[in-house]
Length: 456
Image (cartoon, rainbow, N blue to C red):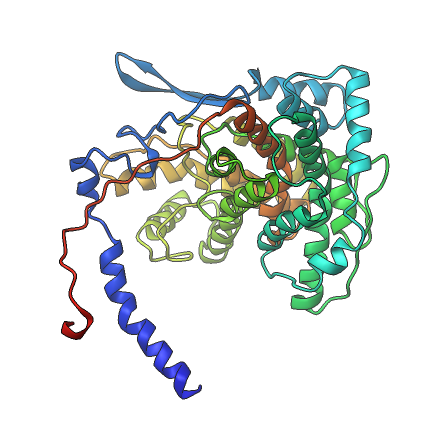
């Protein structure tokens, strides 16, 4: 280490602790100043910041001014997601394209409209000529979400009219559909680059295939031998439908809307949404579930002993087990209380897949964690049982694992699906918002006198 680097490191070390003391704010000050920390009301609900027709969630209702728990519901454009899923499963066909049409264009398509939409997405899938060679391969990322975000920004340079034109919604809609269509290929090529440059494997780049659904194309593109079964593609398609949207209040959709409200371009807005989803408190949670689950499988000797499992969950909450961060991943949601409808649907299909894949023991262990976690969390809070349910991340990670999808693709796959919701929110905010989103922060710094440099 050079003398200069040693000086720089000492400088950082000296100031970091002092800065931390400046950054931390006593939580009681939020109450005293009537500041809604995290844009949350005192009862945990989100502060109303806008109106949307795109998606909505229900996990409780108000009775005599009190929150009352209910089975969770998720709606896309006012339609219950459970009914959407039931509709395409009964027809024995993929459902993501239909879901994307509904979210972005605002209505369910007829058969000919859906076919035109599907063909349009096929035509828009390919990346600009030289994009992979110039933008993805030269600067690979160990985290594919980072490469996705940068690739979205890079696509700006290939667009002859990249800026938002509020007089031309057709142009903006075309851009949205292009990003929706090409996102899986960006992920596949970013993953190929990661495997080659960081994992020492061969470089395999696959082109999209005509006639394939988005789920089929994703599996074709990320697997070296391009192989997949129809059952795998249908289950992945279902996961994508369930991840496509979750109301305007989630962090990544809000990030997209915040940037859009400033009048910036779609590439910047979508890149911000991807950066938000990357976080372990948002989309990255599905990877944390699998990480936590690996600790449980290793450290719990008897997977059928509920007392041993509950004791281990207690240790997780105390920061004495698993990753040591004191969190049980896959449990809890800002809205849902009794159940997360996405988790309910995934769980019902995950059991069947687990039986076929010889992973029923793993599934039942996760199911036991779901059952016991409310008691562990209740004990930590001084109650018998916490009012908390499994969220979609609890079972999506296991489903992806059973599908043989590498863990580093879990969150990028989430982003591929959520692109439909983000693009819908982008369009709604650009033409229906009207004002830049500008929350306020209350200053709590004490008045300080300026001290001349010579006197410090």
